Image (cartoon, rainbow, N blue to C red):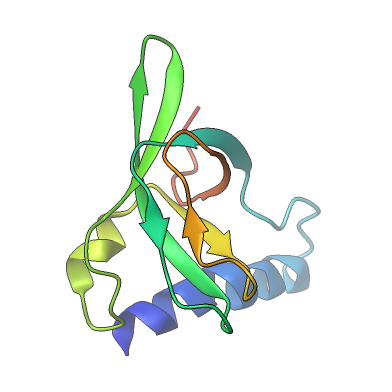
Length: 107
């Protein structure tokens, strides 16, 4: 499950290592984006969806990187991660999302 390892590293291990190194700003930045297309999943489990982000007319839009399986390495080209809680089964097109940036330079 290489993708699962990468996501867990970003969400849990990276902040721990930065804290141990004495850094104060240990979490990645997040920003708002609009869902460009609907995102669906099964209820009952929290999912971390990898997304690509595009700016159109100064508005940020997010869409999935495609298949979200834990072995789909192309999804590691994501600009960010969107957490979908266990009680959510769909994000509607046009809905606002909180995106955790995977790019330190993303603005």
